[in-house]
Image (cartoon, rainbow, N blue to C red):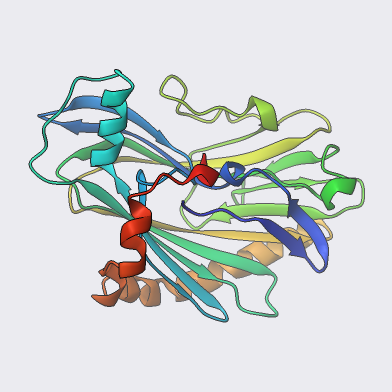
Amino acid sequence: MGFSIKDLTYKGNYLIYLSEQNLTGPWFSFKLEGKKIGTLPVVLKNVEPTPIYNMVNTRTGKSISRITLDFNITEYLKNLVQEKRIQSIPLEKKQFVRVYKDIFNPPKVPYINTFFTIKNISDFALKDFSMYFVFDFDINGLAGYDNDISGYDEENDIIYQYDHTGLYGGFSPISKSTNYESCLTNDFKIDPNNMNLSNTLYKGEGEILSALQIEFMTLEPEHTFQTALVLSGGFSKEELIENIKEGKNNAMKHLHQVNRSVKSEQRNLQEEAFIKINLQQAEDCD
């Protein structure tokens, strides 16, 4: 359960095709800190099995889709206890971090804008908080998934992949990235011992993925982190850059609308249909 892109095309050409779910979306890392738990490193992929991620509600429209879910800290700690990685920790109440995702995908525009709003509604601090955007592009689908080349445009903070046909796929957040990386898909690794991207690009062609990282230091209780990601394609590097710049300008215009939505009472109400689902283990989200 979480957020991932199954496939993505640009004017009929595949940019993402049959990629693994956990390699097409946002990851998070932080150190969970509190008096009762001490300091615990956490790495979350974009999809995690329930009940680690609890769905709150969803809304799907023609051009805007909204997803609200919780990172269930209580269940996460319970798993650590069961795996004998930590001692049992009694908590007086359930603890959560709420994640809002607002996806703007109107017709006839060459980009997708996705807003991410993370609110710490727990009693714990999220130290050294980082958000990563990870995309395993398959430029031209199966016909060209293993001959991609990567690049990073520092001026516009855009990481991208392309192949010999001249088709490009790339992305950039409206918040300035602190780190970037492209590497062979099987070599990508974020864990408690390696929480920063390398600021290097894979040399040559291959089956590669691209990632950007935003460091936010500490997310205190009741504090919020927000950014938006622009994802696009192009038939040249110049076209890709122009599409993403246009997408960023559009994203800035919708920040007020997104903030109004995440603060609304309806957006924060648990839908009854998800209550039972959240108690189940989702085998397809490993």
